[in-house]
Image (cartoon, rainbow, N blue to C red; front, side, top):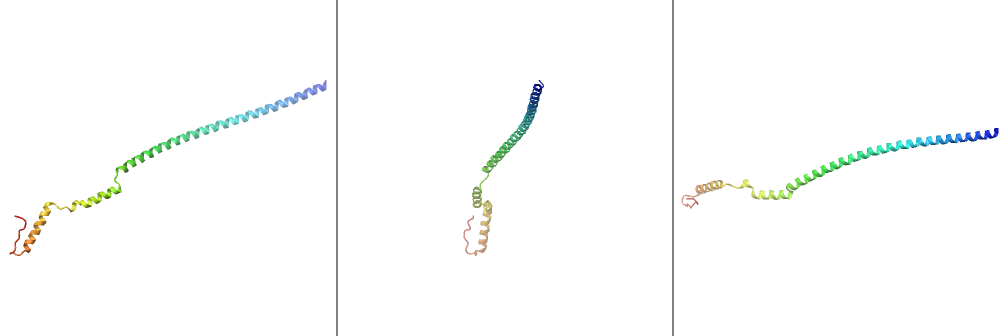
Length: 135
């Protein structure tokens, strides 16, 4: 009987060791699972923050792009309204042909004619008088 009792104690001792090993393994697995869960949550929060930042940056870029498009459109309109180099050259040639400052007034021409007639009268000898064009 003592042998059977010893054998029974041996089995119960081994079962207790195996049970304790299983509990420790379960405890380690539980701790690892908790660590993995925490890491997963942290990674997810980090990813969510990065996604939020990226969305904000994309919105800013879209706003900047819209502003740039508006500026380009405005500049395009201004450029289309302004005169081209060729057009300015044509206007410059036309102005040079016209040159209003070189035109004389009728009064100025009459004065010039009168001076010319007077100078010719003074140079003419008394014997040869020609018609001067005025009455």
